[in-house]
Image 1 (cartoon, one colour):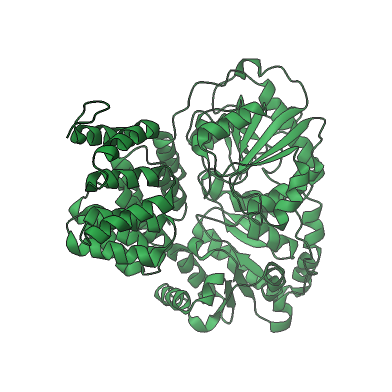
Image 2 (cartoon, one colour; image 1 turned 90 degrees about the vertical axis):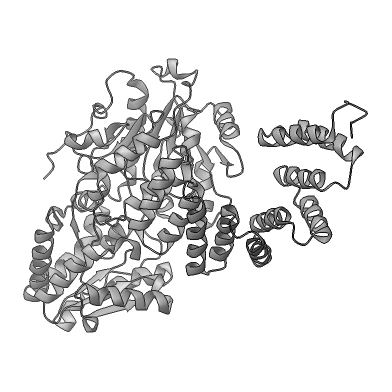
Length: 609
């Protein structure tokens, strides 16, 4: 039948409407579908496209009503089952979605997309093995679907099978190089691999980072310093998070005559730390619901001079926003420990230990070094006083770890087994919130045994509140760091509680993080560069703790005062250095990448051990 308005047959109207839907030309699609509905309002394909348009224009109730009407007419309509199932997944009505998708799979078992969406539903419901089977069935039918490889990678990552997850993300990127979520997860997952390589990480980031758009029109005036500089911080972690803890003290000390601060929070959730951070900003914008173009327009409207990324490729990042270059000067700092790989990021803020000159080639950004360390920590509120060393009372040393279990790989466990073997009677206390779950605890105990750690010498402690967690440092004499992903926040907090950390320094900003902290704290002997030295130094400190209890007690007693006076907690000095760094970057418009000058009047870069 032809349309009286345009003379086009119904089928042509539907084909054109479908094309406009694919191009996201929703108003054109709506006009064509209105015309088609005047001809044949009950035709199944007209109603299906109306429902799909409603989904894409966020009219969920209308879409659901149409899909249910189609299923009343034909309960075996696979497209209606699949689309309604997808809609309910988006609305987090997961049980209903699962039932619909299982019906669709029974009717059309060779549809790869159905198995993918069913896997998503099963995963959301906690049915991990069944979800993985659904993803595998989908890939058996369509091995070249990047989204399914990505979904399988996420599931494997949650199960801490990082090697398999990394391989899934690699496959997704090889099939779809513009899959930004796969890139983010690949880069972050890579940090947890036993054989993490900063060189490989850098290569992946440079290869797949979002391409930069045209330079911001105000870039030409970068050399003109008209204080205060307008500085924007982009992060999803302006809250109870290591980023928030490191940022808080510095913000209090920044000179508002030199820097005017703007926050661009990519998170709708706020907490007590957010409330303490907010007063330090001239404006606080939540950009979580804004697309990159709208967020970029907001930043340009605020006339931001320096835009600072605090996320890298961690959860909630906005790397694609930075690729639009909404500010003349852009830099990476604090929340990430590798290169972003993208040419729109001008600088990375580092320190002399975390990025020695020979490792600048690991960054696509120019390296600008703070004089001592690249961040400053906020002293924990209501932390208990430093307790006596447990070795003084027990006569044996207690090693500890407060790291996320994801960082405790089998390479680390094997080194810890050697240490316990060399210190008869020593104990190892490992604390994690995941030990609240019996399955996680039993799986970790299996790994301990497989790596040669006797369970009778290991105490697994469940998660605690922040105050109780800080108090738990009284239970350990020294912390054994993880590698190649060492601690950051936990290492600084342990120092505050009088407990030093033995760390293994490996190449890259991440690998040297512990070394940077211990060096800034005035404890360079607590960083080693080989696994053999890591084991040997642990045995040395164990003997010292029990053989020289007076000296050990003095170290523990005085450590908080020592680190409080160090660059780790000197927010006033850090703020001055930070202001100087930003002004120096702004003024510096010459020089090649990878060879940035030191900040004006900065202390000379010491040689790295």
